[in-house]
Length: 500
Ligand code: ARG
Image 1 (cartoon, protein in one colour):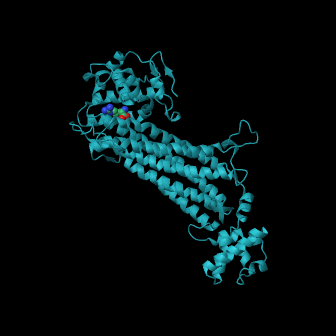
Image 2: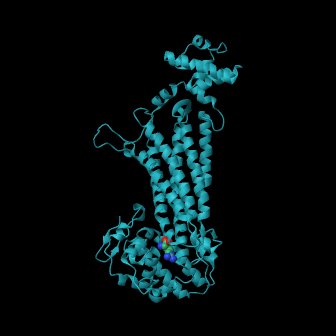
Image 3: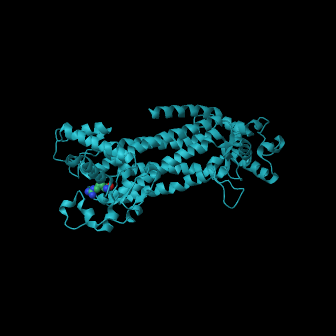
């Protein structure tokens, strides 16, 4: 949280990444200076004769949250000033003064030395007012041919673009960790489940590859989303465009946008680019949550499939024996907020007429929160996976219990000419016998098995072993260790391709 300096009426920025929800409390709790003093500094104060109510000032201010956009806001302003000079609206000297002033402000904010003022509402007006303070009258020319409406939409797109790029890096690291574990455990046998009941043996590597597939689609969705994020609204001004001879392609080039927006009304008002991201993000968190749930089960005394490293667990304050998988549980728990953030933005948009409405100021906390949650969760998850120990014996023992090779026996009978439905029935009776006698299929003698079908010979035992079972699933997408190794190679190639 930021620390207020009540004396000066300023608060200092802190690292934005550490404060997901700076919250309005910091501002609302401040003792405002006189309402008159505040109202006179409003850049829009000209039309007003009465000062803003101090409650309203606290209620409408967003700077505690949106100051996180300062780098993007300054980059956008510098590009805008250069464009204005390029088309002759500003002189070269005016442009240079503005650019130098903005760069100095960026350093000021970087150094935690900027006098943020909630009376100036948001990040945009704080920076603009400071510019005028630093460079004088010429600073007032920056806002020519621009509105906060196209400014904030631009800032959000730049911020999100950068956020997606950072998230990509985290996902690549997590996925390559998964692939390393998959390679190490390509032949390790474990039970595969349906309905959380033992179904068929699979390999641990195959299970890791399933997780990787989920993340691969998440990453593809983010890349797809980025393409629609990277479109520049600047030039739309308040809603209708501007009467100045702007060169939007020039500004877009400066800021690395792929395209300029086609319609000014749409560009200042829609936040679907954030909704798409929140949707892809909620789904990614849902996937991480499913993986976290499995790790929580697997690391329990009942399963003992894996052990999570001490560095990624915590203890109990009352039960000395406990080692809890809190990281996994928190990832699962935090998926809730990302789903909530998606709902918030969908609901925020649904009733808005064109074009910009102040409702849109509420887009920031959900976006920042989801982004922070995804970055933290994917990073900590990679560490947890990398240090996880896989226990082969309990995995194997669990795979051997529960008649996991029953399907293999049925397939064996089919290969000997029995119809699948009959084979299913025969094996069902054998399993019932196994339950009654406490034996697994592989533990029964040949005579015992032949009581269920005369077609069974002693070559049956090869298919009843766990290795026989997984090796038999030898096709693309199957669990055979050789297929797992081939799938890892393909997955690594895809990672490298999408990386470029
Ligand atoms: N702080 C505002 C937001 O985040 C900036 C745009 C305000 N525009 C306006 N006309 N009041 O949406």
